[in-house]
Amino acid sequence: MLVAQQTAFKVYRGLLSAQSTVFSDMFQASCRDESEIFADSPMIHLSDSPHDLAYFLEALMQLNKRQ
Image (cartoon, rainbow, N blue to C red; front, side, top):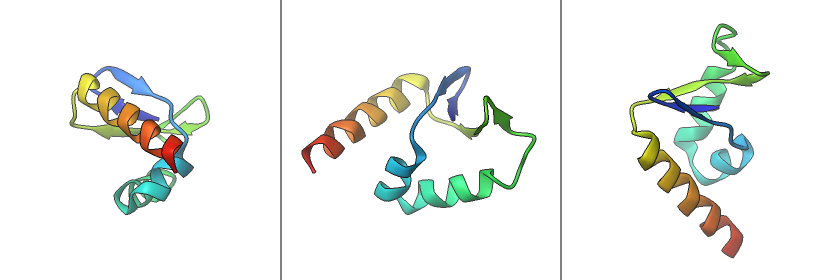
């Protein structure tokens, strides 16, 4: 679960981890902190705006469709 300000995005971490070592490392670190779990998903808080994160995720999904 990626959280930007007050907006949460439930995303498949396998996709993000495959595209980015930064996200892979963030997911591994978040799994260790059980206090940051919501609906059985680890939460990762980002400093991005929800609009920017939505735009990034949409672009990533389009890129993944082409592969």
